[in-house]
Image (cartoon, rainbow, N blue to C red):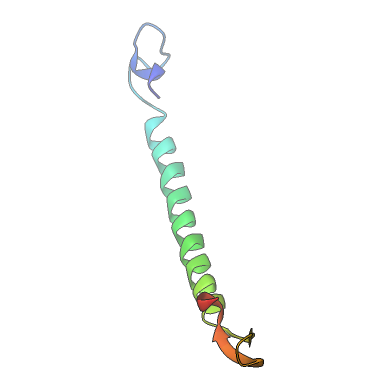
Amino acid sequence: MVLQVIPQISISGGQPAILLPLLFVLFVSAVKDIFEDSKRHKSDSQENNSKTELFNKTSGKFEEARWKDI
């Protein structure tokens, strides 16, 4: 896009003709990344809050704990 602005080397007369398609692709990519990140955040939150059994050395028993606390 930057090279299209230079009239001496541009076939578009110095007009950035590629600007709109480039912005469209970047916008779609950003929206897709935001959607995937929000799904990953939700999945990580569910996994971190799931319960598991943790062995306590002092009492010699298994205790329930959340993954985020381990």
